[in-house]
Amino acid sequence: MGDATMDGFDLAVRVASRICHDLISPVGAIGNGVELLAMSGLKGSPELGLVEESVRNAQGRIKFFRIAFGRADAGQGVSAAEIGGTLKEYFGGGRVQVDWPEPGPVARAELRAVFLAINCLEVELAYGGMITVQPLEGGWEVAALAPRMRGEESAWAALGGEAEGLNPAMVQFLLLPMAVGVLGREIAIERREGEMVVRF
Image 1 (spheres, one colour):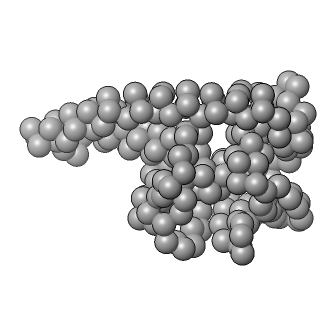
Image 2 (cartoon, one colour):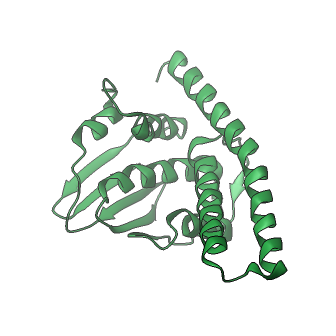
């Protein structure tokens, strides 16, 4: 991967880190405000419940995106509890579930690549399904399992650098090979009936 590409990747993760850093505090403050409203007698109201759900969803997405799209300095690690909590908040009990193996703390750069892979596979599971994560010797396997998938071939083509016409919502497909390249590895993709696997 060329220096210009890596410089662009470094800039992208710095911008993402800055945005997530600036958003997490005000969203957290809103959450604190919701708790105070609940203590004042509004607990159980449908209006407050809607705000509480929205705040949890926003916090979960910011935490997930901060890892997936943000910086990963050498020596940084993320605990199993934080990983599990972030995934639970991000998916929020929706149609997509993640089976996380809890191998203990994971280096931030490794986890960034895993979360980007999860974000890519999530696109295939518009109708629901399961994402499994399995640590390999010197790498990872992340797989999507579902009886019906979207088949986003143009998005997966971006892993090979074919980014023309790629929707901004699919930017994770451009960043995943860069994050894996930082680890000194390459990506292998395997699609089977009811399953799509990403290994690196």
